[in-house]
Length: 121
Image (tube, rainbow, N blue to C red; front, side):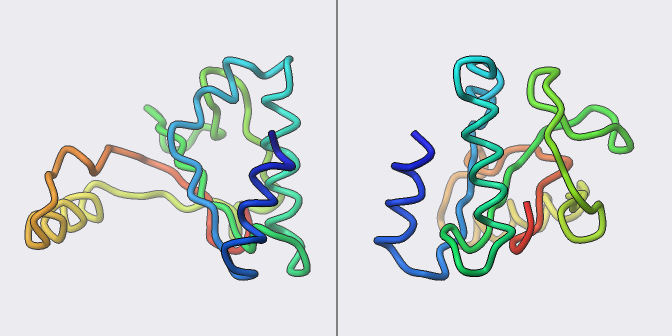
């Protein structure tokens, strides 16, 4: 699966940034390859010569100070400064406003409290 995702990113554009929404399935299949998929994509995103060029992995969190986790499975991060962004409520409110102005339903913008940075993971 990871090879297919990387292949699609390479075919799109060498500067493709992957937005891995609905990533909870990687936790569900953690032992059956979900973890390896995530680790491979994170590793590729950390190396400028590989696709994808970056990775956004929204990880909904109840506690913004806790380590990011998908269904209880810890998401590996190397550096909190470059690989971890807390998305606050005001940002989400502005995002919903922009979506409404563009004619998109606000329900398409989901509540996310953390996501990884575009260059890192």
